[in-house]
Length: 271
Image (tube, rainbow, N blue to C red; front, side, top):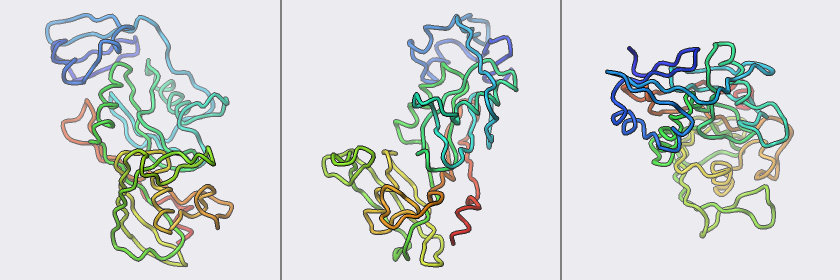
């Protein structure tokens, strides 16, 4: 059998002994409290005590990658990753609409978030008791995240590393600022090309703080195109920021999953 396989009758079979499985996938006792566990000779059945399948709502998400344990969806500009209580349609809704049409029995959950105004790749966990597997990799910073960044001005450095802690702006609840007593944050910018008074960069982030790339770009004096919070010369239009590259471990794969997308056409039009 496959390492992990989920069936429409809400049974997930995982190859190995229970002890091996719990260690291999960093599964916590809390994660198993709502599951019935049946140990077999060479695998373990995980059966949910409560049935809560995904439901089709408004539309399907655009799926860029999928295996038995996770998927990567592409979030459009202006959409929330998950609910903020407003009732707006979210990427998580669209992912679960997709899974409902596949007769997959569990609701997926986003492993991280990107800003509403940002487009791009978002990783989702499909099997509830594996959530800590992905959470641990984000905590340990073993997941690589890169972005396309379109900034105003001609960026003078081929590469530029910014190590600047970030904290909340006490004068504006919507904003973050460089702050010596804030949370550690590091961003590596790399120039791709420049034209029309703008520069297209690639940014690799470490730590993943709120608005990290936006704050660090503005700190260098090169705010992101159409950034309403950090660019005083912003105009109406899409934010020049796209989550374009994810490298991560999946419980299913023996090597890292490497997913990359091209620059969004709406950003390409700027340069």
